[in-house]
Structure formats: C-alpha cells, structure tokens
Length: 380
Image 1: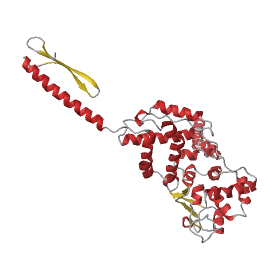
Image 2: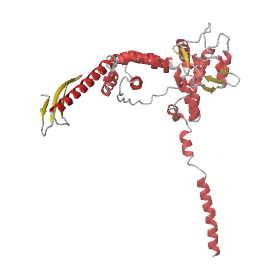
Image 3: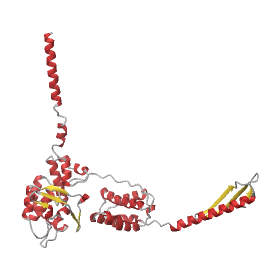
Image 4: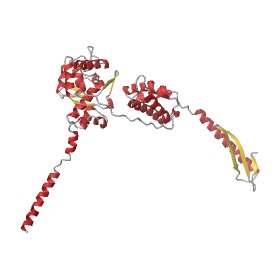
C-alpha cells in the first residue's frame, strides 16, 4: 500500500523506489487532507525521484575514470614536466619513474594511494640492498616526485586530495675536499696538460661545477677584468641554464687567469674542446681529472670535490658566508653554512664581539667619578 489513512483525515504516503546505488524508501504524511490529494502528492514525488535518479545515473556514466599511477605518469611527463623542468630534471624524473616508482605504484589508481602506501614504499626502499642500498636523501627525492605529481593531479581536478607525505631525516654528508698542499700537488701533476690544469682551477679556484666547465664559452670569460660569467651548464649533452636558473659572476685568481690564457684557441666557442672544436664529454673531463689524481698520488676525486675545495678554502681564509654563497651560487644559505666550521676565525670572531670598549670606558668613567668624591671627602 502506497497511500493509507493516518489520522484526522490525513494520509501517509509510503513507497519504495530504485536509485543508481540501490533501493530507497519514501515515507511522508501528506500535508493536505483527503485521499485524492495524497495520491496527487505521491505522483508528484515519484516523478521528482525518478528524474533525480536519472540525473544521478547520467553523472555516473559521464564521470571519467581515475587513471592509474602509470597512466597519469605519462601525461605528467609530457605536459607538466616538459613545460616546467630543465633537461636534467626531466631525466631525473624519468629514471625515478622507471626504476623506482612505477614498479611499486604503477597499477594503483591515483585516488587509491594513501599515506600507508607511501610509508610501505619508503620501507621497501630502505630494505633494498640489490644492487646497492637506497640512501634516505634519494628516497626523499623520490617522495618529492610523488608529491609533485599527485598535487598536479589534484590541481587539474582528477583527484580530490593528496595524501600526507613525510620525508625522512637526512644526516649531513661528509665534505670531501683537498687541503692547500694537496691542491698544489694536483696542479703540479697536471702541469703538462694545460687544458686539464685550467679545468681543475675552474673548479678549485672559481667553484664551477663539471657541467658548467664543459659548457663554458670564451664569451663568458673576461681576461681583462679577470671574471667568469657562469650562465649555462651541460647535462648529458643538453646545454641549459645553471643549477637554480641564475647566472653568477666569479672573479678569477692570477693562476686561473694565466691557465686560461695559455689554452686560448680559435677552434670554436667552447673553452674546453677536442681537436674538432666540440666540447668535452663527461668521460673526457673525468679522465683528465683522474689522470692528474693518479700522478699526484691522491685518492680518486670527483669534480664536485674540487667545488667543495673552493668553498672550504674560502671559509679557511675567513671569507664571509654571504660572499661564499654568492660566489658558489648556492640557493640556500644552509648549504653554505656546511663549510663555516672550517673557518679558524669564526668562533674567535664571535667571542670578540663581547670584547667591546664599553666596559673599559665604563670602568674608566667610574674611576674618574670616584676620584673627585675622594678628594671632596679629604677637604671635608
């Protein structure tokens, strides 16, 4: 029965209806007395409920299905990454997806990824030992890629929210650098290769990265003003803006100026190039450094160790932290602070700030004020 008498001439309307998600029930007292009015009331509400159910079914059929992590990663790489990232960043994300993220998150739908899944991924990375353990800093880099892609999916309204991602604590890595004697030995070992010693001094005396050395052009060097303008870098054959996207100007030392003058050539625009005028590859620049290390009897160094040497020597000589940051091109002062413990005057200078003349002046003034008082007492 869909319409039945309730009391005082009012009728109860009670019927069931179909919905896109199951069955529903409509039960209400007709506000108007009389059976005929109750039947009209029922007809009107049945029609409204049928129209609402049809509208819901249409929304369900037209709503796009949420893509999987693997499917959306292709769109993310071809749109957001291609438009906003440098070649080095694009390659790093490609490796992250292929080697780490797709094997774990690939078949999962984006709206199914939770904080629990992210924590499971972190635990799996920490437990991995083949071919080598994954360091916490690398895991944080992978988490950054996950977070950026999920936030982009949320911004384009594919998912409604992004799970919380907790980054791992990373200990400050040990800085490998050469002391003054070791750098002199390295330069002496490379003296028969003028291009090698010029490249080594570009890193150790000017703080250039390996990619910045390979992408250095003669137009970037002012031998009169003794300055280098760092405005491009080479990452796996792709030349683009340096790290951080900002150019910087570095003053050259005398020995770096002499080294660059000695290799001046007209083979092409690149400072460090082969016989055909093509810029050095990563293998060529590494080979020259490692050969010099072997001749000098030093450990096998990377180019970034020479950049650490540049910052460390500046700190040892007492250079201000802001000056080191500007010369090295550090985006954050925190990065530069890693070298300041090497400064021999850093702690002494901090304590010397307490050694002001105010105490001496104040004690002198007290003695002067005390002397007249003593004399006045004698007079009395």
